[in-house]
Every structure is written in C-alpha cells, then in structure tokens.
Image (cartoon, helix red, strand yellow):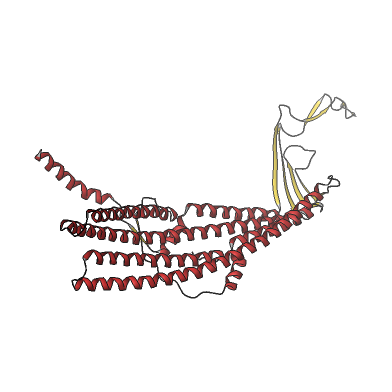
Length: 447
C-alpha cells in the first residue's frame, strides 16, 4: 500500500507541471486594446460592414445606368442544301447561233451551306435620366441607412465592451474583498473558539463565527463565478475564444470637463445614428416621390447598330443603323397616380418619424445628463465613506499596537476598507459608464 501511495504521489508531482504548462497564459488588455480588437474582430460588426459594402456596390450598379449599353446577338445557321437561283432552259432567251440559253436547266449558287448573322447595338438613354437620378438617390439613401446601422452597431459594441471591462475590474476587486472576509472570518472563528474554551463565551458565538466563515467562502465562490462569466463575455465581444483567460488594466481617470446640455442635444440631432437613419429614410421617400412623378415622362433613347452576315449575296455584308426609339404609356387605369399617392404617404410618414426620433433622442440626452450628475454625487459619497473606513482602520491598528484590541477586529476593519474601495470603484465605473451613455445618446461615443 505504501508503495502504491508513493507511486501515485510521484505521478501527481510529474503531471501537475505539465497541466500548468498546457494552460494558456492570461492575455492582459487595456481598454483601448479591447475596443480596437472588438471593432476589428467582432462577428456582428463584420456582418454589418458587409451590408455597407453591399450598398456601395449597388450604388455603382445604379450609376452605370447613365452610361450606354452595348450588346451583341449572333446566330449561325446550317443547311443540307446549297442556296441558289434556278434558271430553267431557255429562260434567258435565244442566242443567235446557239439556240435557247441556257441550253439546259442551271442552278446559280448563292452562298454556301452555312450562314452567320451578327448584330451589335449601342443604346443611350435620354429621358430615362430622370428615373435613373431618382433611383440613384434611393440607392444612396439606402447606403446612408446601412452606415447609420453600422454606427449604431459600433456604439453598441463599444458600450458593451466598456461594461464588460468595468465588470471585470469590479469582479477582481470583489474577489479581493471576499478573500479578505474569509481571512477575517477565520480569525473570528479562532478567537471565539479560544473564548469558549476559556469560558468567556458561549458556543452560540462560535456557531455564528462559523456561519460568517461559510458566508465569506460563499462570497468568494460567487465572485469567482462572476469573474468567469464576465471574462467569457468580454472575450466573445472582442473576437477571442470564450476560454481565453483575460486580465485587465486599471482605467485612467475620466476627464472632468463637461459640455452644456445644449451642446450634447445639438450633437445628438446631428450625429445620433437613429436620427441619421430617420433622415436618410426621408431622403429615400423624397426620391421615391420623384421616381413616381418621372413615370409620366416618355421613354426616349438613341441607338446605333451594326449588322453583319456572311453568306447571302443579295444582302450587304455589313450594314449600319442608327436612330431613336421611344415609348409612352397612354392609359394605365390609375396605376401611376396611385403610386404617386402611395409615395407621398410614405414621405409624410417618414417626416413624422423623423420628428418623433428627434424628440426621443433629445429626451435620452437629457435623461443621460441627469444620470451623469447623480453618478458624480454617488462617487463623492463613496470617496467620503472610504476616508472614514481608512481612519477606522488606522485607529484599529493603533489599538492593536497598544495591546488594547484583537487581531480579528483589525482584519475586519481592513476588509471593510477594501469593500469601501470596491464601492468607490463601483461608483467611479458608474460615472464612467454614465458618461459613455451620454456620449452614446449624443452620437459621439469614441471607439
């Protein structure tokens, strides 16, 4: 048995370094690095960027309708008969000294057994320019809408990464506080056990101390689970495998300067993605009305063609054609007028929606501005509480040094101070996120 135990112990000692070596080293990130990685590798953003590229290509396709179209049609025909002109005997009259001409039935060949036809045509639209112009306007409005969607997605990714980053920092601090509570609870349990043994306390106090120790251990486990969950969310947001271990660097201080609310409202009405999308929808509806009106204009265009044939002698080998072609709808039983009324209704709806979106965005900016002011006050309160906890720890330390206190009380004061630091960090993160949400509503959230 002892030999087996020694062998198992030796195997554990050998395998443990290998297991540690296989674990990937943590990746340390700053906030700027996390944001840059997210904007470069986030799967959702890559999909939205593809839609923007799609809209750009569609614009080029619509613009090409301004330019001439050149097309070629060709055909090759084969026959088992040689084409020709049949001349009956004497059909050309009598020739003195020879008699009827031709003296017998004759076939004059007219080309070979195969013939090739080819026609190349170039067309240039004229009055269709009005329709093409409105169609290009609609296409460009669609591109503006897709760019507004991309801007919205970028801002959503930015605020999501910032929240995950802040949550990871808070989770790290929470783990530190929970571990300090575990140490304090262990000291409390030891102190209460000594007191019970010496008859200075009852067993109830020991039970309470053990309960506090169990609660502290539970907080450590919760903090560990929270850290793992948030780390997974951050890794997924920045395009890394979810199992990638991540550590984050502390955030720099937030700049104190703050513009007036009117500046933020003006920025929102100009740059907020929702406002940009609504304005692009109005532009699209406007061009839709123009396209419906252009349906009343006749379609007139110019064309030029070249016709080639290879085997028919009674037709020229090459022929050039040019001219104009046009068409006009005389009666459509109200289709154009109803289409125009429909497009006008869409334009009215788009204008009303734009006003609604502007009003909503203005309210969002004002609410975010008020929330930022409250977050600033909460941060001040948390800093004041931290200063009081620091003073309490200093007094407990002095009591221990004077021999008037117990070690558990000093450890508990140190844990309280760590928790006060956590509250300050939480309040400062809340202020930072509130400011980011204000920038988000104003349409100027930086990447």
